Length: 295
Image 1 (cartoon, helix red, strand yellow):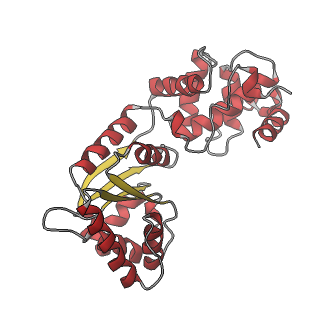
Image 2 (cartoon, rainbow, N blue to C red):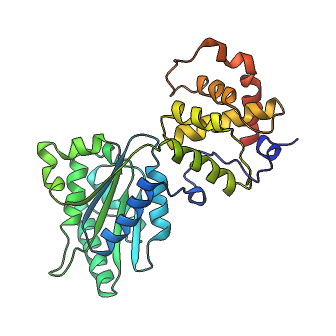
């Protein structure tokens, strides 16, 4: 049986939700943040923050940064911020290949020795923490203690926090202001504008193996409106719209397909007329078959 993406001549689904860096789209805010992060890390800045609303592409940017760091950097990625201080130190130690047993103090001293050894080899460790807005207060303090490690010449460790806007509110609280004063670089990822959404869709389709436009111009405009320019919502709605087009045997997705897909997406405000209901286009059956294929 032909898959829905195979129907359009694609090698793979173009709008997956996993942060696949092969699909990274260099929209202006993401490309600027990426380049500035590399510059700030190269300059030895200790504490960096990237914030953005849910679905703006923070995790994909993080993984892109991981994949493009120069060889002299040794990176540790902490995807689970819901850790106590010892759990954070143990996670960082595991990432750096350092024994993770003992107390928090043991781990901190062990990490310091490891970072000093890296500095002697002219290598620089960096810790990347995703969903940092969820870090408990005592764990945020543990992060600050990590960045206290330094020589007379430079910081022994650099930290990049990726989080939702609530992260900055957390850092402005009385107990965490010391971290706020140490932040040397801060970037805020915004949603994509209309032209960027159109370019984003075409970019992902091209990476997946199709050069032709699979969304009409009106469909791209509607996709921007209903997704509010959030890449994650663009992916969800675009995939559903293409499955609808596939179910009807159409060669590309239209505005009607996008409208129907949006009505089936919980994160989209339900302001569209019932005439665009999913029953009209039979999305339920098509989507069920499509997602089974995806699984």
